[in-house]
Image (tube, rainbow, N blue to C red):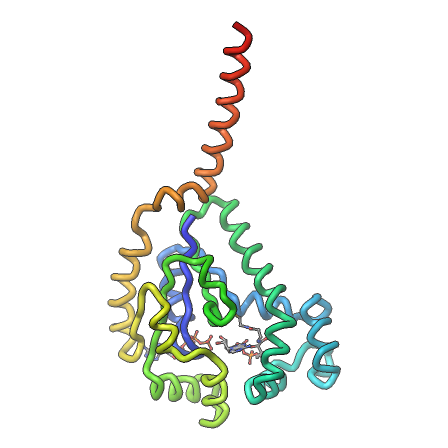
Length: 231
Ligand SMILES: CC(C)(COP(=O)(O)OP(=O)(O)OC[C@H]1O[C@@H](n2cnc3c(N)ncnc32)[C@H](O)[C@@H]1O)[C@@H](O)C(=O)NCCC(=O)NCCS
Ligand SMILES: Nc1ncnc2c1ncn2[C@@H]1O[C@H](COP(=O)(O)OP(=O)(O)OP(=O)(O)O)[C@@H](O)[C@H]1O
């Protein structure tokens, strides 16, 4: 099994690239969706976050007031560390669970879209790592436009993450999304060629078929051993 890591910075274009993967029938695990589920009212992540941050971060219906929690964590590094510490194990488990379900369905190539892949040290589980890079001015402008936020708020969010240049030095493949959507689609085509290369032996060994073959060879080996010991 090949687990492709898709990462980038806030508003660098990960969801746009993830949609291209989906359009080519790749299964995509979205860490933001997993994190949303973890934070749903009544779930363990919700309980932990309420006990760490207090009832003030809740809406009248008991759900987490996401913009309010965002305001707190994006302007305060200590609070951000606290939230990350509280939620990280549940998000990690949620991603592994989603990957496992797709593995059981027999998918050989799975894309995991994790904004904080390097920050959360999940990079060692994915190969290749595709980074969606964008220059800092374009990132700021796209974030302000998409979320209708002020420049200060948008910059706080960008500063809360590892710089895209540092991520670039750690990634295997880089998509420069500073240009148009047409440019992006062209680069995506080259990425697709690399991502769909035949599985290595190790990747095949971890695929559902590889594991089944391994178990079958053990069963056959044991049967042959007993048959030969009868004569
Ligand atoms: C703070 C929250 C409630 C704000 O919710 P909101 O709906 O406004 O934003 P959303 O979840 O869509 O996140 C948007 C982007 O913010 C960035 N981001 C989210 N959390 C963090 C964080 N802890 N540190 C840095 N960047 C973050 C990511 O790039 C993400 O794609 C939410 O982002 C959250 O629960 N964050 C903690 C969980 C987490 O780490 N998520 C990232 C998954 S790897
Ligand atoms: N090449 C492009 N040209 C113009 N706009 C783009 C381009 N790529 C993405 N966008 C726009 O930029 C914004 C951010 O893109 P997107 O939502 O894909 O980023 P993201 O990395 O998934 O963000 P987040 O980390 O917040 O989930 C969106 O409004 C999207 O439509």
